[in-house]
Length: 497
Image 1 (tube, rainbow, N blue to C red):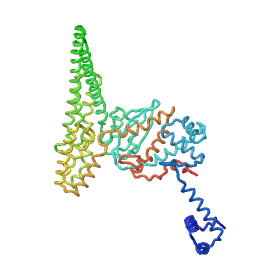
Image 2 (cartoon, rainbow, N blue to C red):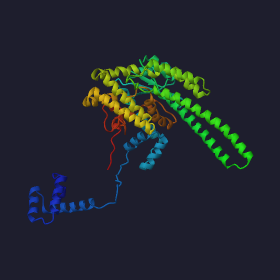
Image 3 (cartoon, helix red, strand yellow):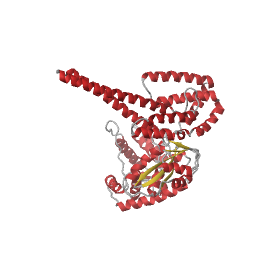
Image 4 (cartoon, rainbow, N blue to C red):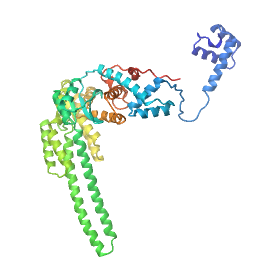
């Protein structure tokens, strides 16, 4: 049988080769190996020669630093099918999928073949999505997106980012979206951007809590504040530039002209600075109500007072000229009650912690959490950061006095996890829609099958970073997904040589 003895493992062959290659070995070593493995002396010498060759090749010195590893890839129909699915999920059009495969694998499938593969996997993805119906009771968020002139509704879990629904419909009225929401899981809270069609659908589906999105209020608010600040500093710079021209002027006429222009620019800069300061004060007051916890008491924000204050700020903006101010004023007055609808759900979720650790301890920890959340959102100046650290130390000492070291760590972890959930908006649904948009834009004609494939691939793809790193949305809702989720679509595993 020689060197191809099937009953001698690779590890045993390595031991034989090393023993034969040992310097100063005796003839007794060869005899012992021959008797132990029942092979001929010629076989032992052949194994020694093979071992010397492998060691010389494997220990050959290479270049400095990381080296690329060459791998042989066998081009087959299954690899082309898998590549078509992955490229499509990345937003590549069918025609470009063919071009990409031709460049990467030197094989150019036809566009019709790519369409056929996608049709097959889309049908399987639709069946799997229909079969997967997790019920974990997490808050949901929804958002509309338009593609090729038709509306699509996405419903995603705010804790897991699992897509519960992704539906294309000819209409976007309340009845249509209401039926879509009724097909999904029951949830304690549903968040949206206050779009009329989706709001009517939430009402038709009789969802208990419809939370409006704070981000749709704060984003244009602070965006306008940034624009006013830029205009104010530009006006101040114009005053400084005119002052420089005044200093370099030599004739009375030019001095008079620059002085007159300087007066006008100074007046404009004063008005712009005053306008920015007034608007920034309003923006900060609105932003203060975004906090979950009232810092002084450690309790949840007062809903009635918050609604009244926001509506009053909206009335102040009504007197400002400009379309953006009228829009912000209307949003503040109309959305105010809906911005705080998360509070009953959050208050109910806090009850077990209050019962276990007591209200004084939980209030102290709530103040700490909100203080940290405010600092992370807006670190502020060095003076503000020093004040933050002092308040943090004082609050932590207060919490230690309430609970002690060991219970405090457990209570802090539980409270941070609870308050760190998404309570106040639909931004996660919009983040998922930002991933969907390039997929829809890459196809001239999209249908429900395209959405079903995107939904499946999103749900089984593990997160690369963040608090969900290493887990997919499907894992987070309790579904069992293999390491290679594409095999669920009927595709075979990759084969490398």
